[in-house]
Image (cartoon, rainbow, N blue to C red; front, side, top):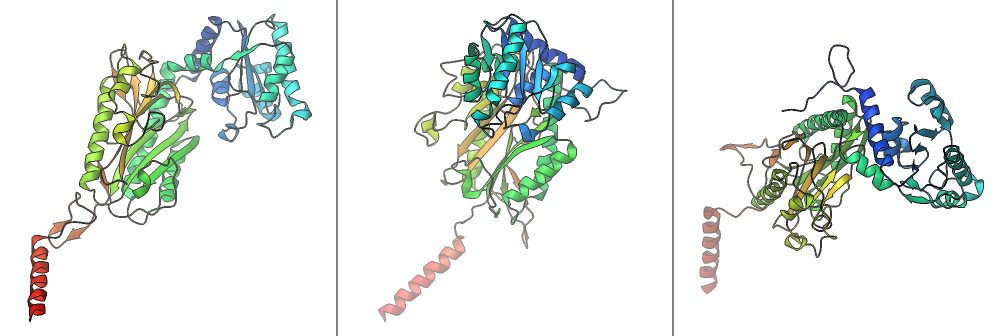
Length: 448
C-alpha cells in the first residue's frame, strides 16, 4: 500500500499535504502548457479551472454561476476578478495573489442583462491586461463563456480560441498532493458506506440514505456533497441517475454513487447491495458486472491504452441498448480530480478510435453496469484507481468483491433465512403433493 491516509488537520509533527507545494506545482503545470501553446493568455470562468490556477475558493454555491474569472498571461502571474468582498479577502489571506485579486462581476449566467454593460466591462478589463503585455494580437484561450462576453471580446479585437483543452490536458497528471487529497476524499466515502450498510433495512427511503451519507461526509470534513445517487428496486434498470423517496423492500437491489469534495478533490464511487436477501438473477448480474470491472482494472498500468480497457467491455447491444451513445456512461471510465469527469474518458463510444496512453499520475474511475435476467434489477460497481509507475493502486476500499446483503437478520425456528432466495419462491414438493391431492379429490367428487 504505497499511498498514505492522513488526518484532515495540518500538524507540525508529521509531513502531510503540502499546500504550498500543491499551489506551486499546479500553477507550474498550466504555465508550462501555456508556454508550449499558440495562445498569448488563458481566460477561465470554469470555477474548477479558476481554483486550479489561483488557488482560491468562495464556496460551492458559486459553482454554476460563472461569477468569477481569471486571466493567466504568458510569462506572468494570474489575475483574479471576484466578488468585491471575496477579492478583498484574497488580498488579505492569499499572499500568492496580493493586488492581483480584484473586484469584477460578469453576467452571472444571464442574471444581468447584456444592456447593463457587464460583458463590455469584462472585455475591457481583459484588453487592458493584454495590451500592457503586448499580447493583444495573440490568441486568447477561453474555457467556457457566456455569448455576450465572447462577442464583447471579439469587438475588442481579441481572437478567442478553445482554452478548455489546454486546462484539461494540464490537469490529467496529478501531483503528489493531489493524489493524497483524492485518497483522503475516498477514505471519507469508505466510512459513509460502512454507516449506510449498517443502517439499510426495509422502510428506509432512498432520500434517507442520502441524508445519512451527507451527514457522515460533512462531519468528516467534506466541503461539498455534490450528489448521492440512491437507486433501488425496479428503478435500477434502466438507471435513472437520480434518487427518489422510494422505500426499500426485502429483496431489493440498491446501488449508490457518492460524489463529494474534500479540499476540492472529488469522488465518484458506486457500491451495490441487496436488502435482506438476493435472487439468483441478481447474484449472477453482480458477478458479471464485477468481472467486466476486474478485467478493466487488470489493464491499468503505464503504456496501456484507453482503447484496450474499453475493448474488454461488452457492446451496447449485449445489454439491451441499440448503440454506444444510448449506453454511454454505463460501461465507463473517467479522470477524477477537481471535477468529477476529467480526462481521460474511457468508453466504447470514443476510445476505440481515439485512444490515449495511460501514464503514471493519472487518477480515474472505472464503473460497470449489468442488468439481470429478471428485467428490472441490475448491478452497478465503481472503483477509483491511481496509476503508479509500475501498475496501479485502488483507493476505494469499501468491500465490493462479492454482492453484499444488508439487513439480513431474519431468523426462523430452523435458523437464519438464507440470503440467497427468490421473492416468489417455488413451492415445496409437499405443497405440490397437497395441491395435486386436492385437485384429484375434486375430480373424484365431480364424477359422482
